[in-house]
Length: 302
Image (cartoon, rainbow, N blue to C red; front, side):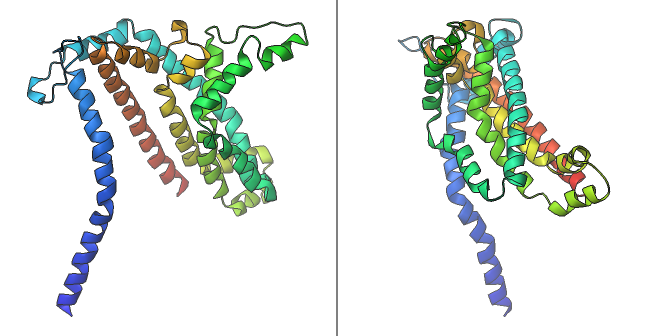
């Protein structure tokens, strides 16, 4: 019996590592190896005959001069404005997502009734269409001969050059593109909310507004933080939204700076260095998100 129990325990200990092996191999092959390649390019100063950086795979030969120069240019130089645009645009787009997405998620989860499935399918429908295609649709809408200007023409307004490099157009496009990423996790959190707690608050004489701020919002804080993280993090690295609806240097984000640097020959090391800096920034926010999630979870269970 003891031998059988030991054998069974050994199989159980080996089962889960074996199940995790495909995912681990996938992570190593498609994340860790490419990321190491970025390090090898960022910390290399050798150029080939086409004036392109030769990856330095040996860490002992890494040179950090290009990376340090890129850091300085991000703080005081040519990349500073791109970083500022990324933070400001992502923050304002996230505010729009919160203002629009929370009421929508709340209505679907708590008030939609039998229409919940249909409304949720409509929210998820943009995921069935390529993001680039949806942004190109915005280009058609906002062009000088597009439907928006045709509508404004009925009131003798315009035509307005929406695609001429305006920050507000980029912000609205970002909010539109990533809004489903905000609504879905928040909907899941609101859907799990115990209805009896809301009813108890109302039985104690609390109105709808006070019930929302003192019961609903605190109990869905983890879902709200998760939705904000899932929405904001990819916004920082976005470059094609700004390229399609603006394509102006005056609204360039850090993703556009990376794209431009990687498209060049001798500047690819700078582009790889910007990728590393962006990864560090996102890693910081991811750590902050995890910390806030843990604190919110502990507060919700007290």
